[in-house]
Structures are given as structure tokens and as C-alpha cells.
Length: 396
Image (cartoon, rainbow, N blue to C red; front, top):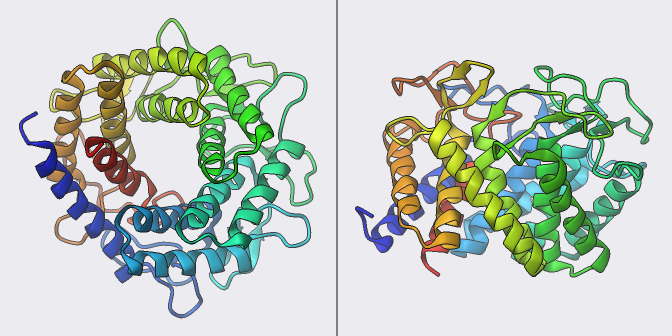
């Protein structure tokens, strides 16, 4: 490592503060409650933009986690705000679960129940409970867990389907976003059910929850990871027939440490060993195939086409994936790679003029200024979490 652990921790703690302060200063919706739905790349707030469940669940998680790390009371105040808005507007009081999208005034405009969104509600609610032991928050997280298990779990082939209607009926179009093929199961949804289930288990040692976590990890090892290439397959039919060909380097390296975290949290020694071996293989595959000479992470590859843009979130997840691989192997080359990614973030991804991180930069490191700083998918969760995780792990 070029820098001592203490120096790198100090720099990343300062960056965490920068990010959270950006959201406090710019994203609070003083007029309509909660947080605004969109801020463009040049800082223009779109006051009438819809508000998404993903953004709001991630905001709740981020401020709760930042408070749990730093004990900064202003972060807890923002977490209170995020929880109150999610509870009041996103929770479906009649049918349970969370709506996908609201208008700027808090009225549901897309009532579909995406499993992915239910997962992020649990993630935010459980982290908020860890911050302040709000019993309503834990109860809601538990209720959504039971909802996922009841409505989304595939009893025949295992795993979870993508989406249902407002009152839990089947849907023809289950896509998470318009750019994806319409398949009933995805890597992405399973990753973001595993993640909140792990966090919920930290504050609720329920044996059924533990069993669910074990089954999801097994799904990853048996169906989602290609054991030959150590990359995730992305889309699947009900019976786990692969329906995609793209490689997402950010998801590979994010998944490597989230699977390891889950196995560690439930203290399943056999799974820990199996997952750790695969996690290192996945990190190595990303290093060999998905990394530029400066250490930054390419977006994805499909066939022979490599998308050489560098999105903000794979850079964040790569830092954690590399540090996790170092913890598993004690090989300091992974720490060097983590520092390379941080240096790239510091130079090209972090917006030192206007705050927060750019959505993406091109192969030369120039940002796309027309893309959101705040939006349905542009949230403080990937970058704040990476900084918290790296600092926590280096301070152990």
C-alpha cells in the first residue's frame, strides 16, 4: 500500500462526510416531504419528479448506516425523515409491501410490487432499527420478509420471481427496467434479497430467515455463478435456464463480498469456505478481464463488445470486493487494487466542484454531465456503503 491504513481511512471518512452533506444540502424536499426525486448532472432540482421506492429505501439505509458508523446526529435526523416518509407514503397499508413509484406529492402512480423494491425496504428499515431501535421499523421489515417468502418464493425450482401486481397477482411484464429482457428471475433481484436478509438477521435471529439466507446462497452457487468463468449469469427462466449472455463486472465484484458477508453473518462454516473460494475467483476474473490499466472497472461485456464506460457504482463495489479478497487470502495485491480504484474515484468519479459522484465517465475519464446526480437509480448507497465498509474493515 502506498498510503498507511490510517491515512486512507481519514481520506475516505472525509469523502463519506462530503457525500452525506451533499444529500442533506440538496436532496431534502422541504415542500412536499421526504427527498426530491431527481437532480440533474448540473445540479438542477426537478421538483415534480416522481419518487421511487429504490431511491427512498437506499436513502434510509445510507443515513442510518452513516449514523451507525459515525454517530453524527444530523445523519440520524435524516434517517428519521426518510423512515417517516417511507412509512407514510410507500407502505401499502391495505395489501402490504411497498409501491414501486409515487408522484412528487406522494400519491402512488405505479403500484406494482417488484421483489427488488421489497428487498431495499427491508435493507433500509433494518439498518434504521439498528440505528435507533424503532420497533415500528423492525415490525415493517419483518412483515415484508414474510411477504416475500409468501408471494415471491418459487416452491418448485427455488429462488424468487421478479414482480407481482399491487395485490400479489401474476404479471406478464416482470422486468426490473425497460432495458432488460422479460424473464421471471434475475441475479440482480436475488443479490438484493440476500443483502437485506443478511442485514435483517443482524437484528432478528429468526431460524426461518437464516434458512432463507442459506437457500439464497445455495442458489447463487448452484445456478447464478458460472463455475467455469466465475462470472454471474444475469437472467433466468423459472427452472434456471440461463437467458442472458452479458457479463456485469460491477455485479460480479459486489456479489463476491455480499455472498461472503451473508455466510459469515449466519455462521455457516461450510458455506463460508465454499463462498470465500468462489469470491476470490470472481474478484480475480474481474481483475483479469474487467479492469482497465488504471485499476478502474469497466461497465460490462456482451459477446465481443466491451462497454468501456466507468459507472460510479462498480468502482465503489470494487473497493470492497478487493478488501474482502485481501481479508480472505492475506494477499496484499488486493489492497493495492483497492487503492488504485480509490485513486480513480478521487480523480475522475467524485465531482469536486458540485459534490457527490458522477454517474459515469468515459474511457478517458470525462464525465457525462447530462446524467442524474439524484434519481430513481442514482442514490447514496453504493458509494457511502463502500466507504463505510472499507474503513470498517481496515480498522479491524
